[in-house]
Length: 316
Image (tube, rainbow, N blue to C red):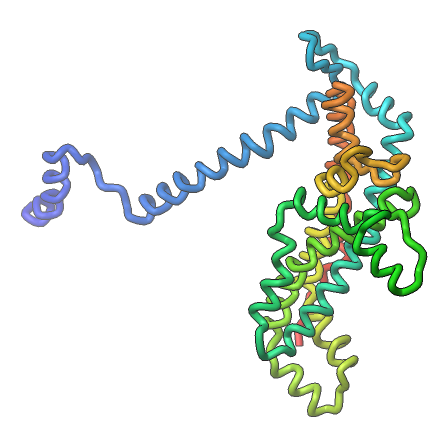
């Protein structure tokens, strides 16, 4: 009895102070963790998930910005989308941006990262210089590149003139405009790729290179059998992130040719720009939501396929 009374004294003291039964410390930590996680989770659900759900719902309704009626139309918006040649052109252009831009910026980013890895002096300064375009506002960068591409007084045509080459129309040519936009996007994303590849290169243990060098492996074999396999997680990350960026290309296209957005002759039109024009210039929200759903499905499918077929587990 005396032993039970001693054990009950702390509980009786807490009860007298109005604190109730004690909660184990492990539970208290878990409750606090869930409480802190609930705030960003609520923000993510309200900012990301709920608008996506609304877009799915809107894609099967006829929704006008000035009308109150929102009748259910089933797949009519998707059928109109399939019959619209501008959407097909936007989809084709977006895929072309991705196919040209992603490999180019990955190859240049890896090459620059490997060169910076060999530099012993001013490496931090050079890394910052390459990263500056990534944090430069897109609008400002696009207007500078618009001036560079000017057929009359642009710096690029000035260089071509010094080399004895004829001036090029760049943004005014349906054949050259898309590649001119890709060049600007690659320049802007290059610093991010360099930083990512530098982190990946520095995570590779030096002992592998030393052991392979003692076996007589040259630079190409070191790159092919050590660097590339061990950089696979970094490459997969860069491919997925870069692909998603190109599939959502918008601000660069709009600002590089502000008076003819998506032109000339829809040669630079992207799916994101098509959605904007249909929604806020033609006020056809249902069709714009249907295009958003298609773009979401394409992005999801491409990302899953890349993760499935590019990921490799390498162990030495």
